[in-house]
Length: 142
Ligand SMILES: *[C@@H]1O[C@H](CO)[C@@H](O)[C@H](O)[C@H]1NC(C)=O
Image (cartoon, rainbow, N blue to C red; front, side, top):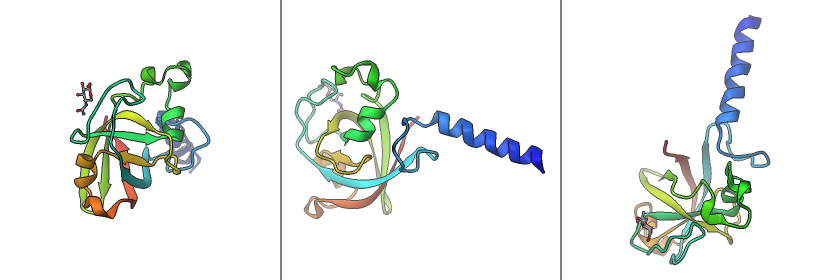
């Protein structure tokens, strides 16, 4: 069924174009979802130009995803203007999930799509004492 196959190819093509990431990142780009580590930090003035605190549900996204977000390259000197700023993502760990707003770039995150939460955000997924959680699934909230 060549027609069906062509349709399938088309579907995949459009999904790839709709993905928020440029090339080079291999984490499930097609499905627009990621698996990453989660940690927490004490935010201050973030890369997006806002000052946030530990009790707010903001997140710092791994530098690789932050820097390759569509439109990010238009403002290489000013991350405040990265269109990723203000985007919401839903992170799930086991049975728990939290929706957070991107306000920062995680320079020290080893994984492309790692998430550095505030204490408030991390606590929605695991006890703070755990420190680092693996296999956090996340996706953009449209
Ligand atoms: C982050 O900080 C900015 C400015 O201080 C504020 O407007 C915004 O609501 C904060 N974000 C969240 C999720 O609390």
